[in-house]
Image 1: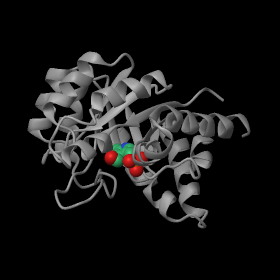
Image 2: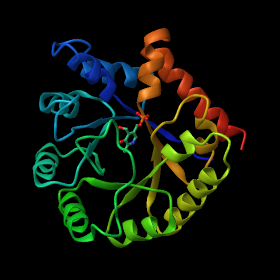
Image 3: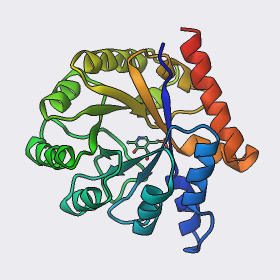
Image 4: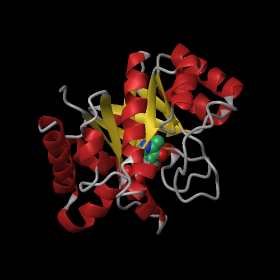
Length: 242
Ligand code: PXP
């Protein structure tokens, strides 16, 4: 099975910094360390309310990392203009509500088509790989394909929250297979940890995982380099043994 990419979401390093509105810890330094520890890419979500990642962070990440930058963003004019200027390798469109703690569900790809299609068209025209964060169901995968996205990121939150229920994993497997059969690149993420990543890492069509909170949390105890290495080992072991 081909190696799966690990993109690390460094938003939570910025969350810690913003607790004091100071300079530390620096998400850019964290990004560089993640890369040295084996990350294949860096993900950061520039939220409209700038609660963690700031505009200056995305500028520095874009200019200074040696892997690739996946900019997570809402499909708004402001964010699309920033993406067009920065030209990250990839932009992942996510739904965004100001009151939420984290991205709670996938995009409403069936009912928000005009706005999403226009956003995807702008990203594609700028040479930015467009990805849509969607729930793992057939209608969402088909809609993402019809909208012209190059990739889908399957929301693994339900899988992560329902440890003893086989249904969410089956849904991810089916959605991944369908996405790949339609020619979409298939990614996944949200709520993944060293303990639950195995079955998702083992989905053959899934070429990239985006993981943040559990790696940054684990880094408090073992350091960022080891936290990244632990996740890498868990992903590789799952793919090798399936
Ligand atoms: N992918 C997307 C689209 C997200 O919004 C998030 C959370 O910001 C993640 C992946 C990473 O989720 P977690 O921090 O739970 O690993």
